[in-house]
Length: 83
Image 1 (cartoon, rainbow, N blue to C red):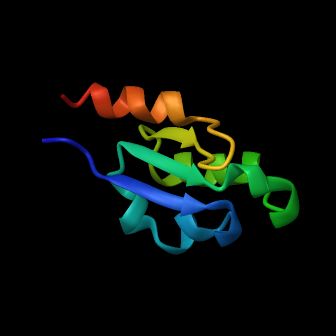
Image 2: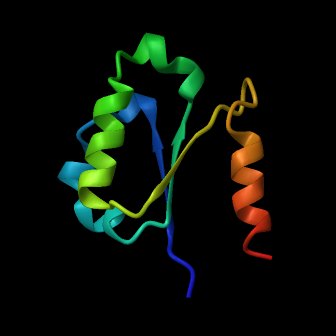
């Protein structure tokens, strides 16, 4: 059985994995979206990564921007791996 995926935006804050651990705990992949807005959001990406791995140490983190395409190859590769 495949592990679930979780989507979080940089606009949601670093604390979400700690506030809602059941959502993240079994995630195989956590997609951090809107990575192109990182500067405007004020998010501490290292802290978010640490919080994700504190709750889900096995989770792969993919940082994705639909606007710039950053991380899209990694996400598509993960999807193809499921086929």
